[in-house]
Length: 251
Image (tube, rainbow, N blue to C red; front, side):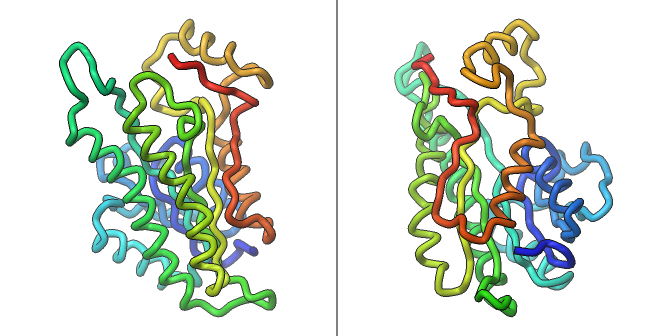
């Protein structure tokens, strides 16, 4: 899939995994529309080739507007879902039972939000002209190794990311007739702004648990893999772990 002179959507595109991916796609010649919440966009750096669009991924009409904006700028070929949240709570903790609203919110943002963008972006991608191989575009979702190795306190987060893993193959099968591929990246521990508040000692402890390379992953490595998936035309319906062979312990 060629990226030059095409449009791309990246959710969570103002920072972290999404910010790195938006920059990588723009560097390859795509017109990138980075969807994020207003507060995140206010802190984002201006990057050539990236247009920031204030969007709540759980709101269909807001996503429709963003998709239409991207599609008007050129053929929409790529959508990468990076938006997500990860609060921690035990099913039974010191304060009682896991808050149901919190559980539902995590699933809504991480899973339902990803599905919302996947579906609405695919609708626009399907209306573009196919290339000589019948291709029209690709959607890359973000899961987590927590989908497989969820730790104590990650019931909501692991559920949402497990849902994305389960969505990958049926989505690829559903959209095959339109020439749209669907893949998922399941990253391990990535050095994103979510880890900015932890101590160097804690960060070193996390890195020491990774078999090899014995360090935290970088956002640009996630972005590199996302771009590789977009450009590799035979990758479809697959979940790819990017974790340095890490398998998480219970806690």
